[in-house]
Length: 144
Image (cartoon, rainbow, N blue to C red; front, side, top):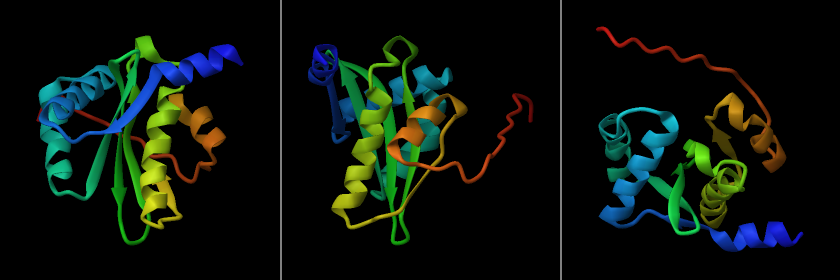
């Protein structure tokens, strides 16, 4: 129990509001996605700039380590870009950034959420209360 309390003290999640936090969010997402930060910026920044998507950055011992992105719509919430840098996994950060999105939804009286996540996070999503509804396969090609 002491280890769990210590981990909670070392963990922090905050909404991204500054340019510095936004750049950290991009770099952390690129790190766990294992892709170029420019691609993350090109893909997600336009979403965030609409004001309809709320990015969250998770920290462990003051170091940026996890990301999430919440869309809060009229029909419910959608959660995207949930992930943790490999060296910070299994410390509750994925759960923490997911809960930040769900709290934002609850604060707007939204009681339904969908999550687009990976198989790696499936156990954590189920613990939080999500149920697998559909499996989507995504393919990419480096050549046009």
